[in-house]
Image 1 (tube, rainbow, N blue to C red):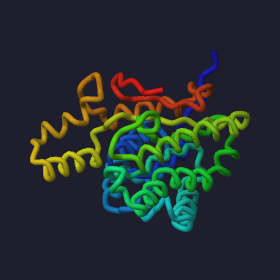
Image 2 (image 1 turned 60 degrees about the horizontal axis):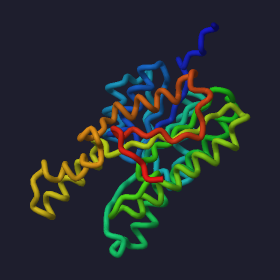
Image 3 (image 1 turned 90 degrees about the vertical axis):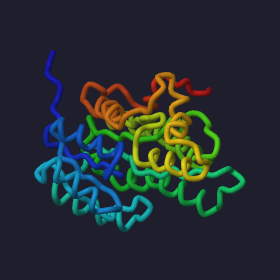
Length: 263
């Protein structure tokens, strides 16, 4: 059986790479031999990650606002100049504010849609010429959520946006199937990221519950009784990037400890 092609030297773009899942994905890709553009709005965490991973392996794209076409174009131009065309795109940037539906403002709704769904559209459309030119083996992996497959109270905007990401994934996978570009979504359950830790702190502050009691609100949906780790999500992303996953496209891979998605 012939050896599968190597990922060594290929250029990956990871949005929202400064912390949490994005940073874990960047680490996994660099370990596999890819050169990675780590993109995000804040320079400091990106530069800290680049120092950890090595300057030869990473390019920092700070000020990379996924809602801003000009910022995306500027960031991509510099990334291409450093590492050449992008052949692996990981759409990870997102936000997850919570509020009862009645208190979800138009501004909150619009912002979440713009970042979590519009950002995937914007960056993918900007990178797509590179991916199509690369052809067989090019990859798009969208970090969605179990909220893209079922409903959760108090995050209607987030659920709606992530359902949109799953739908976009499925539709684009069909469009690109004969180009050799695969498009998949990874759908983590509640994951131990700064977003969740901030949510726990907010619960403690507003309700007077202990940190353990607040954490239990997030772990109760997971049959394993714990938060998913960013590294576990990154492992699933890496699997979808590997050459052995050429036949996997249009899928939503759930990483949630056995949580059953409502159909």
